[in-house]
Length: 128
Length: 128
DNA sequence: TTTGCTCCTTCCAGTCACTGGAAGGTCAAG
DNA sequence: CTTGACCTTCCAGTGACTGGAAGGAGCAAA
Image (cartoon, rainbow over all chains, first blue to last red; front, side):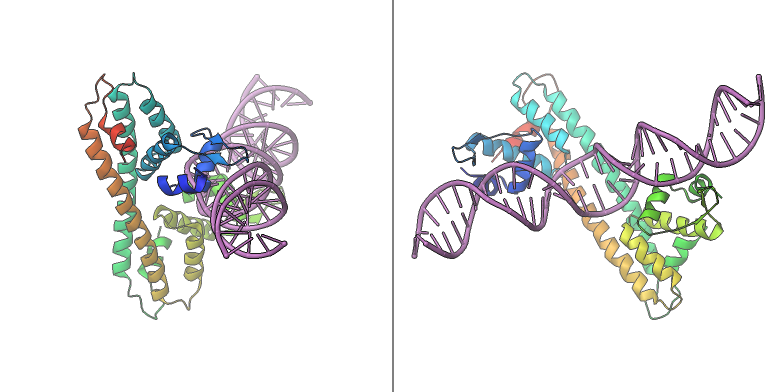
């Protein structure tokens, strides 16, 4: 099948699939006319990558997970460690964003938001 | 003062201050030897930017907030709107990361993480 | 004076993961 | 024969820095 069909079936943009090929993450056969030609196995790999992507893994992590997936001698410990490293990153990011959210929420509630220039948000940014 | 001192006092890397100058966000005087020369007012602006940065605003938002800060005829409504747009972004990002975290947490708990190859994490990535 | 050190300058390239767009080739339907 | 949807490659841009090279400035110690 053409890249467009593979894109629809993996829910990855065609551009992204070409990019993944360029960086050696996935590959495909080629037809005589130069068009990429994907089979079910290729689509399966693309879907695997699409799911890792939706969980926020980095490209290098997709690569690692794909390699583990294809290695029958892998240990589940290695997979779990990759997932644990990633969830730690996700949690750190959440904590950071939550502290921003909290600070912003305080500021927004302190600000009248009317036609006057007085603004605790600017005051806070300008303090110190 | 030199850029190094301004960097220490604003808690922004010197490289970042030069970058902000390049994009027209801040500016400074120059000494005869070509070195940038910062005064208290400059440091104040840099600190303002550093705080906006720590709240996760984008560079274009720092620019907008600085302009509002410097405009005595601003309305606090405009500042509050900028903050509200930003907090909505932050909340959307938090929600996205939390849904990733939840999915990852399930997977990690389902995985034995031992020497065997069987792994629900890979199974889930490969499903469909 | 020379050495050594820290700080400063500019410029260029790289990061991450795409994304957009230009210019042109392929193919089936009408 | 044209139209339109698809495909190809290549190049450039995104955001917000960050790293590094190559070289100049300024000051203290030997």
